Amino acid sequence: DTAVSQTPKYLVTQMGNDKSIKCEQNLGHDTMYWYKQDSKKFLKIMFSYNNKELIINETVPNRFSPKSPDKAHLNLHINSLELGDSAVYFCASSQAGLRNQPQHFGDGTRLSIL
Amino acid sequence: AQTVTQSQPEMSVQEAETVTLSCTYDTSESNYYLFWYKQPPSRQMILVIRQEAYKQQNATENRFSVNFQKAAKSFSLKISDSQLGDTAMYFCAFMKRTGGSEKLVFGKGTKLTVNP
Image 1 (cartoon, one colour):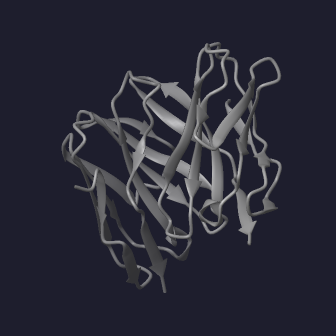
Image 2: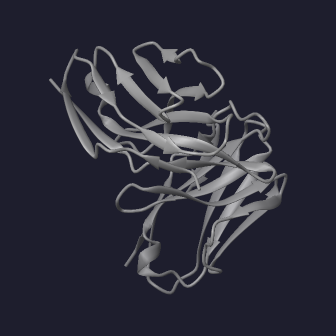
């Protein structure tokens, strides 16, 4: 009965490869997010989707392409992986317009580039 | 631009004692929301407490409470009767509205260690 689930939890791959991280939420929320947590634990938003539409794109390289097939899913595809992409990626969801409601986070995906 | 500052990179406290984590923020908005999230070694992001800026009363959740000083733009977290399970990174966050969505702007975190 996990609210926000991400797969995989760990991803180890070579530089230059293409990889995807999947996210699903069963909370009925209409907004989903991707955050990146770097090696210093700093969390920063990357993307936000509301009802399958891109709302926030925080100057993320074009190699990162989010895709939302429906409002319960937001996947992150990364092309030509670079060493600097090593981080923990968190998916989150919330109900837009209810600002007092917190964002619910997945457990994160640790991406390691060799 | 909204910024969130946590000035204490690391703190430690003895079990059963009280500790306060500081957070200041900068915004031109009059109504907004603030949160504290906890990230234990398991990596999960867990909501600890939230505060709405228009509410003068400080939020409280069991052993966790905040000292919200709107004029000073300060939002500190007090943990009473600290427990070993409180050991974690604590992130202060400001919810910023952007278009039809909101995003969380996080501070850099405070690593709290509770010692037995």
